[in-house]
Image (cartoon, rainbow, N blue to C red):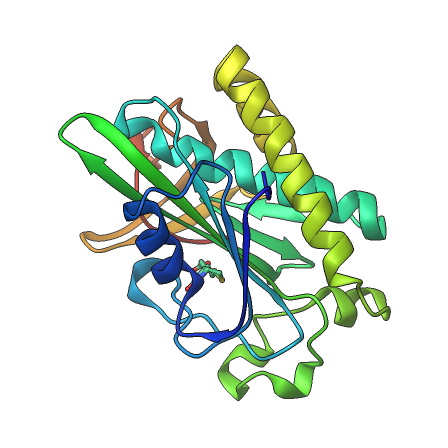
Length: 244
Ligand code: BTN
């Protein structure tokens, strides 16, 4: 990973650029990194606050030979990779909130957005977008984010060497992607569950269809969240925001 790096000063979204590069035939492992995004994208059509020179805003192009419905597993591969990289670099243990928020002390430090480009039942590319809040001070966040977002700098009091963190994250993704391709999802799932905050807790899943309250049991091989409601019925949640 990272043999081909496209570095940009300012872009609207690294996802958009990576998607275009992948349509133009960019090889697997191509990475797009920007200092700033003017229109960073988040999950569920939200925006992602991406101020200049402080965070890591990057998109990685993968081309796995998988069926499209397996693509969400790569989001979980990436989440574990980012957590391991941060553990190694700054010795704090972040937690993962399903499906792919990485938190420290309950506040969001990293978001991951996976976008799939597939033809019929074949994946052409998977674009994994990673946004890591590295060196922001709390004041730079818009007010509505101040109580829910954090950065590595805020949590550790130290300035993060972003180049080093990028290198580490890419190395971890490469390794875990390899494990995933060789051994399947199971080892990844175990790692993911070891970092997950919500498993075993009572949570509310906010979905388009309404809310579901119950106990988070674990994840399925599709990366869906298994929840048990108060009547003991088990539900599979594919897309939601979780409140613990
Ligand atoms: C989320 O909603 O939690 C996902 C946020 C993903 C943000 C990253 S930053 C790099 C890449 N480019 C984007 O526009 N979004 C992703």
